[in-house]
Length: 89
Image (cartoon, rainbow, N blue to C red; front, side, top):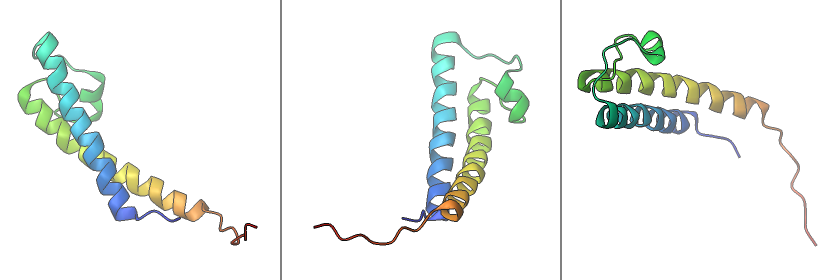
């Protein structure tokens, strides 16, 4: 079964972006806002653990998820081995 590249990429982008957004708010809820550079702040330009940074992280993570999902789905479809249909008795 082949994957729909656009649908899979969009799903990955939504999942990764929403996850980054929720985790940022989770950290702010327990530890407060942090403007110190984080590891993800070095990867996602402008991302900090602040309310504004959560939206920046959402945007960057969405783009990252879409690209990663599209590459994965494309590679999956290229490597998919087609097996002949078997008849079960």
